[in-house]
Amino acid sequence: MIIDMNAYIGKWPFWPVRASSASEVAGDLDGWRIDAAAICSTRCIFVNCADGNRETAMAAEQQPGQFFPFASLGPGDAFPSEKFYGVRLYPQHHSYHPLFEPETDRIISGAMERKWPVLLPLRLIMNWGMPMQELGVINALVERHPQATWILAGINYLHELQLAVHLMKRFETVHVETSCIMGYDAIAKTVDQCGSRQLLFGSGAPVQHGGAGVAKIAHAKISDAARESIIHVNAERLLGLSNG
Amino acid sequence: MIVDAHVHIGKSTRLQINVDGAQLVRVADELGFDKICCTDLTALFYDMHEGNALLAEEMKRFPDRILGYASLHSTRFGQEATDELDRCVNDYGMRGLKIYSTPDMSIAEPSTIPILEKCVELDIPILAHTTPQECEYLLGAVPQAKLIMAHAGGQPFAKGDWNRAIMSAKRFENLYLDTATSTIDLGFVEACVAELGASKIIFGTDTPLLDPWTQWTKIRESRLPKQDLDLILGGNILRLMKVPA
Image (cartoon, rainbow over all chains, first blue to last red; front, side, top):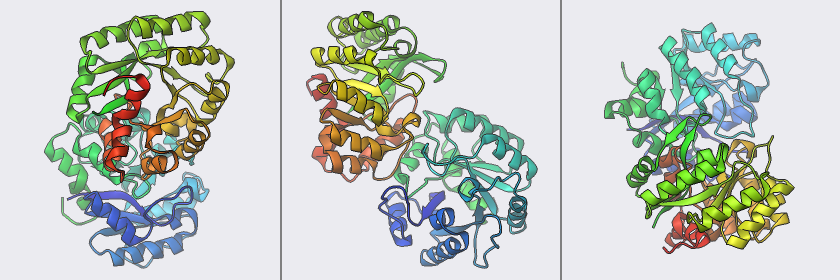
């Protein structure tokens, strides 16, 4: 069982990708033996959150049990009425500062009321041509809302992992997904420092290669129990699929 | 025959690496790689003479597994650098050159030209950590040089823009792309082959900076025919280095 906590549906505006519809993305995930995925439409990131959230909800209806829809909300966006499992914030793509925009606190509080995890990306995918979030902002936002269930996404460099490990050690509510972790032995070193309970497999699919993402977990020098935690057990807990 | 054309050996404070040949050969064994092409970090970032000599020792320890790139920490050492390159190829048996560029210390400058000309004379490839624009400058000056763009744009100074790298490689016959990238965009390898042909694509992992399993999987699971994979996974780099398969 593999659950991907950071996948997308929708168009990619910067270069062609082979999968964008729900069925195409589902097919790619099947090919990589990824059984289920938390998804969000890229329309939420680049066009309009309400439209994108409807698209995400429809995709989840098309792929029941395989897609777990995450909403994306920015300032002024209402919580959607459809069934969602979490929320993603994309401040650097929605042109607001998450510390100084009061709506950020409303969204995070709303997510906590709904027992939704909040995914906050440092970067969308592993690429330097797109806007990034500052590490200090992520640190401050987590400190402001330590009770929220956080998924820090798009972590790559050693100093970024150091912040993530620091936060995971301080707050058991903080989790990190693996889509942009590319370093040699980085997964094993992170597990050595803070265990596996707060790590989540994420692929960045279909923009990123999901099979390559799976491989770095499958071959990481960690225990089988830690591997199981990362690839599905922790995700099941966050998605409310188990009592974990 | 699988050859990893982009591997680092030795020590670096900035990169937090301290790895010897035995460790790298063990990693290659785990992945099923027959040969690894190494560049020494001391030579690349501190002292070319000391670092290249260290690599030569590792090549002696693993003659069937480790192929060497001579490395220069700067192209601004004039005759001393070209003499070092000559020694590395003719005395140590190294088969290529590795050079490194940053935005603030770019190798796209006149001092690099005689180095490239020396590589043409020695008939060795150059693995260059560069941007597409830097490659265009260098090959504009020395079009006969066989230049391998390390990371194919998938590194911070090139903003991860592998599409731009493909455009450059289309313009220059002797520009090759190395697949070791910090990005793992789906379709990258297939797009490279579709636009350039498999003969210009060279497999590398950037071990021990990047996770080699990630780099290996994106090639192994690509939708390419076997003859293309054979070129990418070893045929091309062995041809450029004139090493029998």
